[in-house]
Length: 468
Image (cartoon, rainbow, N blue to C red):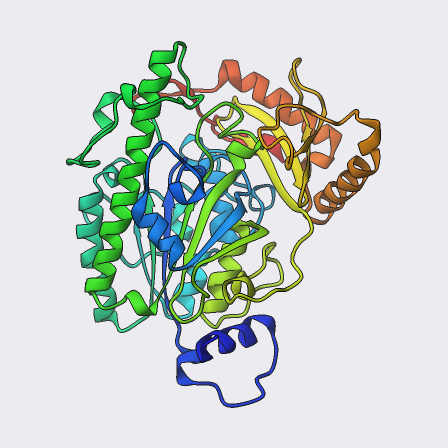
């Protein structure tokens, strides 16, 4: 490892250096955090065969690809709130979608705020999608588009705006934090988004799809058409990342920037987004950091997006607060073999206010236990999957007598996590109240009019008070 890597690991692991450290070790990197909306592992470096994603594949080959990366909750706002606070959604309060009325508990520390206090110049393009937005301090955003989502489908525009941000950041003389949020491949999957501003240059059609995804389609031809549109959107994200990184390089900032790319949750397929099954919570996570990350690694440890904030703070030379739930990925980036977490957890609370299907999960290196806290008629309260032999989670083994010790071990780990993390739904009375409130909101909640998804439920005024 180079000297910077050693210095980084010393700082992140809380060890004492035994000799002089190069000045490079004390540099604070720029931070480029990139998200793609509703992107699961549909990248060719993750095994996707319908398309090739050369720019993201190259980023992975030159950096570190995490094979088992998970979001905290498979719903956009809740996932992003966990990413930006390092705390679980049930802790930070972002139980569901921000534009429908859910919001975090006020006064919580967040990544942009802490970095700004440390002297970083903050920028954002695309949606923040977390409330209260005023607690996230950004020095720069596109003048006309603000933090709207849709315009970031125009990835050439994103690159041009980013050129301006990089110039402003250099002018400030500060290291920067730049939060880039592509709206692709989020739906709706209408023909007009199959190609935007000429990208992808050669869009796929239904006839190019041999194996359609389980998107919301009633007939096979529609499934192939929707899958082609989804794939085209992923191709556009890949092209956009390529354009963005070219702007970073042209600005002379590539060698001093920590780049993190991830999906904010999985695709809206069967057992995908809004659930804790693997297609919903498992996402791509790629990290590139010149001189600090050992290139070409594929790490198989269980990692979570709540680990990103501790990683960034440690890289910036800042202390990682004890209240944060994740841990810095720095040792893994540096190529070290270190003890890592045995269990990884995910949760689901609300998506829309009238969409309450709470789940909690724990997985180890092979098995996954899933609790349905308010099971439907066709759901079991407890499900157990052997991810090694059944990665599609097609068959629950919860009643398998041979796996009783495994089930008990995972139930104990999940119970301990829920206690330590203060899961509010451990209280049966609160769980029942949330169920009743959600049922009531299905009939009484006001509706959001207009936009891509009209007539979805909104949290009624004062409605969040009823969840306490």
